[in-house]
Image (tube, rainbow, N blue to C red; front, side):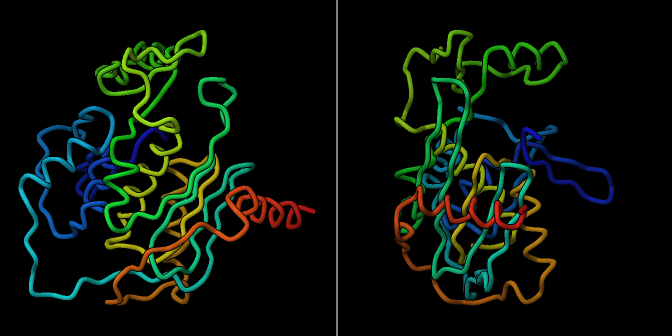
Length: 254
């Protein structure tokens, strides 16, 4: 619910992998061994930036094999009440996201991000995870999020104020972090996706269900060695883009 966990048949589990996976995706790294001495990947500063920095320091090695991408061939949508995720055919990978919180510190925010040609490092990787002071206190009473602090998350206080002294890294850091999470979750597909991702009020669970639905339909995807191409903002703008999905859901419900 609050992070992405992987496991195997032997019962071994590693939690909170989404920020590291996001750094891999944004850095074009698709063959790597990760050794973790503990139950979860370190949260670092709550973003993917420290992982990207270390990857850049180490450098990448080009291998003698064609990189395979996963081309989305038809639109897949997953709905959960007023939340949804979708992946549509595209010549590259882009993400549109919408969040809507009652807190005035966050409110409603949308964003479209093309993640080619350095887009991930420039626009997404520094966006930190976020939460509310009252939620953190409740979780810690239950023995969860014991390492949570202002050093690794943006925290919204009881009066709807940002408690971090340095403020936000981006004016819309909240929606950018949701994109960061989605990029990491979708990289569990096993390679880069050629598809246009759209998410509204969604999280790790719906991202995972979207991948499962995509691969459950053999006609919805194919492997390709085509290189991802830059994509542009959906025609009509973001509001019209999200309204298109909402109108389809309303018509289906009626």
